[in-house]
Image (tube, rainbow, N blue to C red; front, side, top):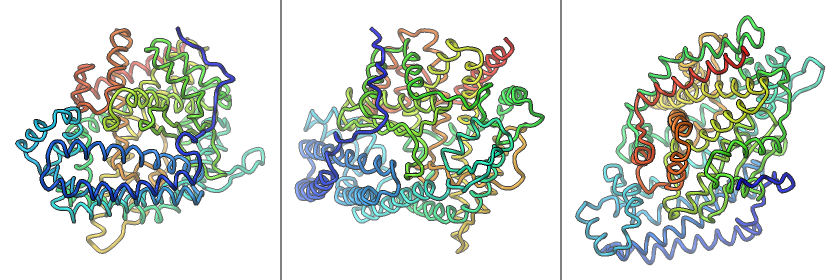
Length: 612
């Protein structure tokens, strides 16, 4: 039975009382966690001198309990700060929690040093001494055993690394705050009708998506384009500091640079990513047919950058209500395992989604999904829903994460409730394919064209812009290091020039971009994350998704069985092994070539739809 959603039960704001009943309760938990650190140190440090399997099992259980508790505390602080980046209490709580995480890494340094130094014979002995350790073998392999060449040599070095990590976290928090309060606040413009329009992170995307006045779109685009340039020196200074800390961490752990460190952690090789970038650069012309469709549909001689987001419908300002969006998303799950619908209903009716924007009150731009594995509860979804087509896609994207997180949290041990970034992005992008197929098959021609065109624009984003951002990060880090060696600091102008040069390698030749160097990099949250080189994972995940969607269309029943198992498995096996076991997929050049073939088919579908 496919239980229908009751509109009266839909919720649009978070109620996080299941995290903590009050701010004081959160502070009490913070104090208790500080005390538990001392207990872990006093109990296990001496016992690790002569480590046994029984001692290791006890330590893992204590570590898991601490991790679960601080996960809940961090989630509470981070999500509430997202609601208002100016909220001092949560700003302090997040900072203090980051410091506590750093303190934990320092206290547990004795275990990190010990466990990353053990040889095969040592591990065999520990597993033979305590059979219950077997359930943690994959975790121990992924966390300690495979990092034997990339580990702190002693406890002092581990403590130093923890301090570096803390500084990286603080820079990330500062960057996200600046982006929200300054970088994306470009000022005001006057629209054709005389109205004063404030350009911020949300209003910018909305106007460029729905305003049929090309002059309004140009004014809005220009206002932000030149404002970002004005902000580039300030953000370059922050980015240079982050790059310095990144490089220090990489050197301490015996990596050539942080890019290599990131790839190793992701179980990927540089050759795999180079193959991907090569395919997408070589085949970027595939998108020219889409851009030509857009140009003709808009009746323009030449496409400008402020023409690329406008919804291709006779009514681009049409508002798709949040209620309409959740109904359409639910219907798109009709062919999926029933658990999709069960988790969907829990999420949209249980105060797990904060839906609407409020930039004037400090709400952070963008969207994300935070798993609540520690509580086995539905995930928290952060949105800025404005009622445009892309917002519907964002909602189903984040719900894909939520379904994945809930399945993991209720299927495997807490320590296995994780995965590599490109794995975690598969269910979100798969949801997008489900949604687009449903809309195209069940809507009028105008809506189908608008949704499919927007989706192909997203392909262009996934397969050109996202890999380009990672390549920018890599070269920006190199540039920052060169300037530092010369006792200088990288400037905004230099990073703007780098961004523009790279974008020319990836972007369409049929769009007339501005001659000036762009500072678009300044507002991209991902490049300031401690989790470096994030965005190319979107391209990998999308390529995997298109391969999976092909399997779903051909054999839905067997696919659903494998897909639920895949989403539930978490990190119980390495990512490449998991992909191969459940779907027979490998991450290689052919995967990316096949993805671009699917893009071509989608563009053909759009042209056929438009010519009906």
